Amino acid sequence: MKIGLFYSFHAKKTAQTAKRIQEHFSSEELEPVNAETVTPEQFMSFNALILGVPTWFDGELPNYWDEFVPALEDLNLTGKKVAIYGAGDQKGYPENFVDGLGIMAQLIEQQGGTLVGFTSCEGYTYESSKAERGHQFCGLALDYENQASKNKQRIADWCDQLRSEFK
Image (tube, rainbow, N blue to C red; front, side):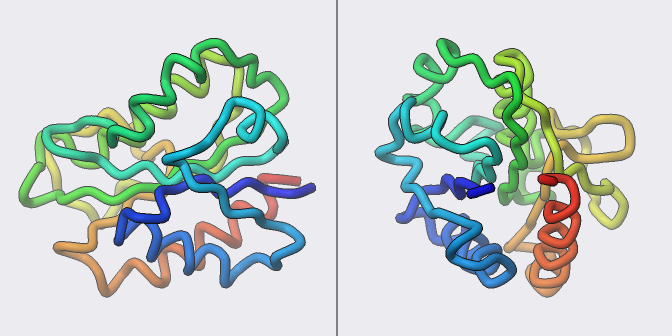
């Protein structure tokens, strides 16, 4: 099964994370796709997807994902497994830490997609997040501003988790 890795090739931290994710998968397993130019056909060509969705401003999707939302709302994602990662700033924006993950997760589920790659909220300090489900985030939450030293291990652990959940 080929996994589509969708992220902005121009978003520094999201692209940095994507490169680390690529280190854990072979090129036969994973195909990078620029989220800034993605088409519905490209999106639907994979049964497993990893989406890089940072949180912008006060809890918003980046422009390129926001522009894809109307197309996404017309897709039937039944049978698709989707994992989401993104960066936020838990000290600078504690009231909407990694909200982009939660916004995208809701869209994916509304279209019938199955979310995988949930991670623990333990070890983070923030007020609220649309990405929180119980004591888990609906994806991989990263904080390059305040916890950069933890990112490499979090990404490695998450990729190990995805290997089993994508099967």
